[in-house]
Image (tube, rainbow, N blue to C red; front, side, top):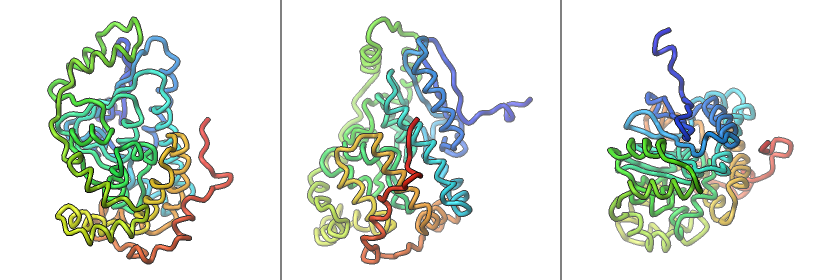
Length: 356
């Protein structure tokens, strides 16, 4: 059998005390499929009870991306045929995300390159998030008619001030210093030192508290990524994004007169109006939510999103035809009714997400 036939999208190995997850789809920027999510969940469950495995490390193949998110093209194709059936991708992905959030041992993400959407779900929900100077992080869902999910209702609300709301609405891209300021990352380790960090984690003696051991090792490799541009914008973000209503936020941006406000208003103007209103409600009304409850809430929301126009149109414009010209429906914030927004948060009844 040739190498191509043997290639797996995600590999699992035990290297000394380390359970190793390696995303192996560089041709799609290591995007997650449903099968990858299910396999990761199974192995995490096994390793949680395996005394040999003291820590888990997750990495991505190639130098372009750690993980660019979920395979939304596959979800849209399935959703056009069966919107209810298509949500099984999210139920499997969210079960995996919760397993990461509740994993009882040190879980370490070595992040080099792009990390977006579902890639943040498999990293930010874990204990240690180590980024290189090549990281580019974002939650860009409002630009494809979706919403920040994979536990983002919780981790965006953990950001300082109104920064999480700003990131959720705009999909702003973050560098290494910004990811640490936002709380997406815990440490900065340059690309050329991450392999040595991994080798040191594998060779270490885990004789006491494993988290203390990991803390000490990572600190030996960690450096300073420099100043955060996002930190410098914090006061403006807190002021301009103070309202809970996205329409009021846009009004503030338009009236402000600063370059930052003008550029931000332009970005928001390209996003799905429905997604913007849903995201604002999602984040401002659930500021103290747990990861578990966040995933249950987000499952309701994405289930309803699969039944509406904007998600399919957003993916078409961004990933299929790539014309970057989505035709949103409704086309403006004024056209998005409170009833449409509220419907995304209503219980699914017997279809609610549950965790075994």
